[in-house]
Image (cartoon, rainbow, N blue to C red; front, top):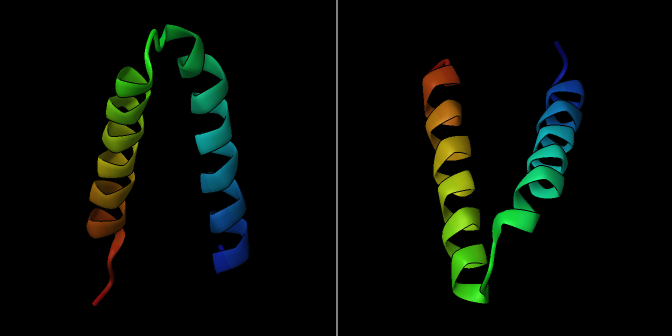
Length: 52
């Protein structure tokens, strides 16, 4: 896969998670925690896929 295709896939996934997950956030603090967890998951996946 090309990097642009992977980037598009990741962005669509993030948008999908956001659309599904945002109604579950009752406060801005909750939103911050959710976004932080999402960032951690993306970072972990990127580390797993590193080829160098």
